[in-house]
Length: 455
Image (cartoon, rainbow, N blue to C red; front, side, top):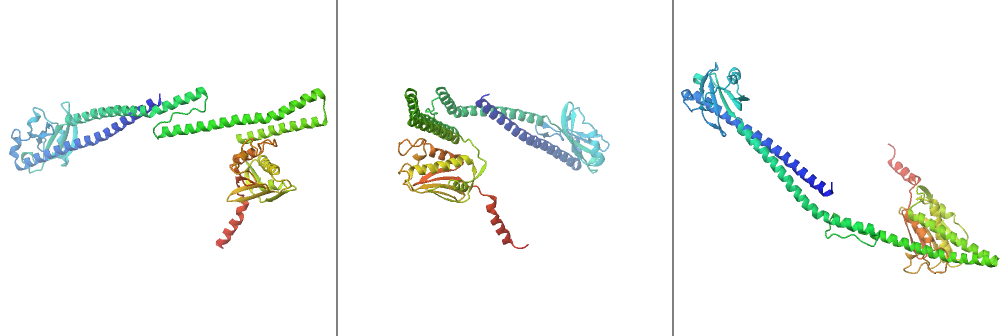
């Protein structure tokens, strides 16, 4: 079933069940009130008859004296003495006689009560009340008042029919209302589906889904999906640029390599030619290695569960011209990848710093972060180039030195570890979440325990 059909069916079913439950509750309350009303009328009529028997016994036998309506029907009244013999009866009984056993319990124990009996194929509600000994000929007997329950049953039956009709009508109206509402609500989804199908058919990420006019859930969904398509388009364009840049970077050493190989085939080898061949092969190998490392970092591959001391990594790069000021700062990550990132920053400082200048490597924690900084004595990137230096294949000077991927690898490594890489002047910084070792808390725990004092 479609979403529209399921929604309409659910709405109709819920409305039907709700109205039926409400109708049953109303039916129970009304049926209880009708029965209570009938019982009250029977008891009132019995009290009136008992009063008549006490105050004017001669009137009991007067024709019609005991006839009175109870609801829409005539009450059937019968007065018996203590031996169960009929003293008076209402004209509504005609030639019928109420069962004498109805009065036996009331005469025997002197208490009245209600009963429901079947009489002449009719269901009667009966109230029996004992009479006092001073009630004339009927003294010590009982008065029996009965009325048919057909009217109550008919009213309840009519109420059942009305409840069912109301439930069906409400379910139909609810289904129609939901159908109209769903028609308007699903129309934007239909357009979104068609737009997505067109994008899937053409494979063009520059296409966008139609934006609904309303700012509801469907509108926000369309906005989110269009933002996703825009992100995919940027990723695809970045991939195209990456492939184009990689092809361009490989073309130069490959062209030189092919030329040298052709010269070798025609004229034989020479020390200079062999050196050129080795340099070209080394450049291609280094570029391929950097491309592989960048691809691995951007894909999120590599170990992430190691505890790495950045201070120890920095101390390992001590060399002439490099000053290291490193504190033990722990992070969770991929040790070889972090070593490579640090090595790329040091190599970048060597290439772009002044000849003979100092390179400073600093590791320290700041507000729960681990900072690994590499700074040289040069001016650093020009204004506006702070973000460009971390782009793939970007070089400040197109002199052919390096692959142009070193800082891009640094950025990808930092982001894979939940941090970032940035430059301020000539200081390049990797900022990562620091790992708080349990041993760092021991002093605080001891101090708190000492402050408590003896118990």
